[in-house]
Length: 482
Image 1 (tube, rainbow, N blue to C red):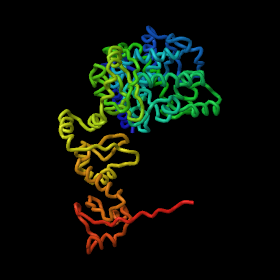
Image 2: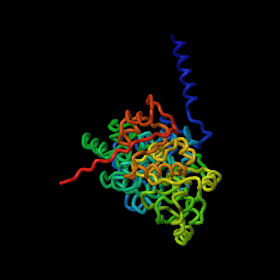
Image 3: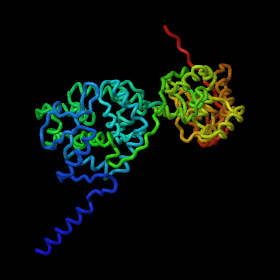
């Protein structure tokens, strides 16, 4: 038994040595227990920040224990306890490569985000909140639909901050618009809770949940709520994560991170596109910048053209803004056909083929309630052929979209329409199309299946595509009104 205990003890020591963080990735070894490592960390960080050492179990007054990291009149306490130390260890050692990517990606937007936060009189250190939320991935999307740097939900973005979120534009992906909305949100939360820790917790867990916890347990101290496990697990970790990121980000070299500052985006100006449904390639030409640059400046634009339902606002650098102001009138000449080609074509070759063959086609503007199936029926052409000539990957169409249809089918459809409209014609000649049957034809022309069979000498209900049927037109019954 004694030998077994000794063996288990040796095995436990060996396991501890294996999971202990290596010094190769960082100048520090962070452990959750030893006091000397914690003191060494505080001593080094104190060269740049005034950090208050606070055990996680103690109750502190945030207004008294504040750091020198102060912007304007609102302060974020920088406290270092076991919870914060755990996340410093996680970011700097265990997840070193990923956190380095976050720092590198964010460096491009840091000055922009900090300036917007400070314009709203809140601490620039809240920049690290976006790092915790999204790792500075513009297209970041959570499993519940939150999107962008600041992870706004669609309803919150639309309802509370009047951001555009639809199939054409998602302003949650716009670093400028979303940061302005986040600054308003955070400022409002601070005004409600008068505590940045509680404001951050509410940003993650929701205002009502934090307020209910405060009222139920009679405390406004975040650490006390955390220590008693009165908050969801994600919210318990949220503030320590933020503090750890802020401490590391203030001097990343001390924690083994060597980041090359990415040049910030150009100073941008908001410009109105004077026409609806304009292709981005046309805007880039009118602005004198490449299509890639235009998309980089406007990550909120989801399509290769602006919304056909409203006037779009875009971001342009000053030089492009002036060029666009001179040339934007030429956008009026961009036809709907060019817009359709911009959406459907992925190469210049396919675009040129569509233009060269345009004489063979007529064009149909998609109306509300129409589907590709109804359009194919209207023009007597197969759906697959419509998809082929319009370079469509699926059967989805949108209102206002222009579709090519074969000219001969357009003429046939028009002829049939004219024949139907004539009051002096007693017989209509109808060419059977795909998906037609006697019942659908009879319903369309106000007759019966039996009469169709009789007039066309049919022994059964079977008909074939291309077959010509004679349909007796019945006079419409007109009733007088009193």
